[in-house]
Image 1 (cartoon, rainbow, N blue to C red):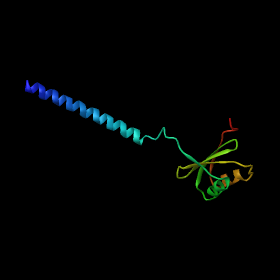
Image 2: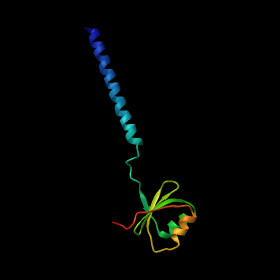
Image 3: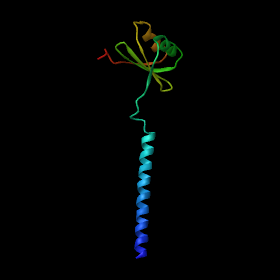
Image 4: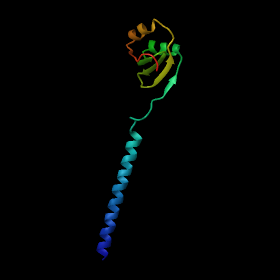
Length: 106
């Protein structure tokens, strides 16, 4: 009788250990999984964007209508309003910035 109780206790302990490992594993995956994480963009002035481009800090920009979203070399992001600046495209090309145009805003 005691042997059966001892075996049952071992099984319960093993099941609890497995459940605990599953919960810890799930918590670790949730904590370190940033695929669903939204990236925060800070608002900056157009002049600041031009300065950052000239300093080589900007990796790429996405233009949609009059809005520009910039991605920096450190993976941070910013957004700004695009005034009519004919020299902007040339400045971006000279500084090696990847440009994506998504057309007019919807």
